[in-house]
Length: 377
Image (cartoon, rainbow, N blue to C red):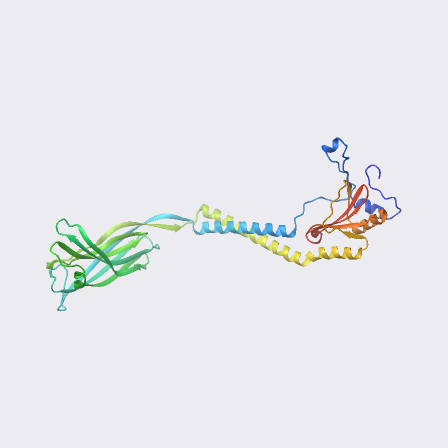
């Protein structure tokens, strides 16, 4: 070799092919002072471009991770679009009223606003009516319920001595008709049953309060009720109602604004990119699944055809001597080099996707590299 160029002194028509298919890397001498600072390379017009190669498994794992990240991002932004809401206050007019009848033991029913003898009373019939008219049609989570609150108070200072809540009407959603919500509940109060809940005493006053409750936005309030004394010999009934009361309801409504538009566009882009990656990854998997054996078949074919020339390095190959490395693009050329210098070809698997065929000379290392990527895109 002269002037750092590889030459073969043979009269062979393939000489130029060998020169054009190799790359010479000059390794500096150990004793050289400049060898610690820089390494020289000399190329012999071989057209070999050095590049990084990622294995099939690495590419698939990376693609799956990216697809998952894009999918999660698209789902997050999509939920932002769906759940992008704002709080609004809607005004509504509320009314709650009740009518009652006191029915005696002789089956006669006495109208409202009378004075009643407790010894003659059998039942009290109560009809509750409720309506709420909103300024516009909205969805609400409003409910009503009716309880009987039995209580006992001290006659001296009216302090509470006893209290018990009894459910008369279970929690029920209000009936919706356009922008109006209504409810009607008819109940029968057994007067003597409630009177017997507490022992009679001259020191206490007993009563049952039939209450109509509204539950709205985690808030519970009384809107109507009827107070029935239980310890008096004669009495009248007191009722309280709600008439034309203006209230405001806090609601959350979906909105479509600039932020929603941005979220929607971003969601669409991420979704499209995810679908493209899924398509490309699927194509790669199908293609490699069909072609991956071509790489192994090529290695097996070379090992069988040149079995008498090849030594298999089971544990991999690692040169202990620094040499110039000559990369050869064609296996037949490597065989010619082997024949010329009369050295065996060493086969070594670098990893799952790359293998090397090597011929060692005293000062030069001839190498033919076979990669899985040679059989795929």
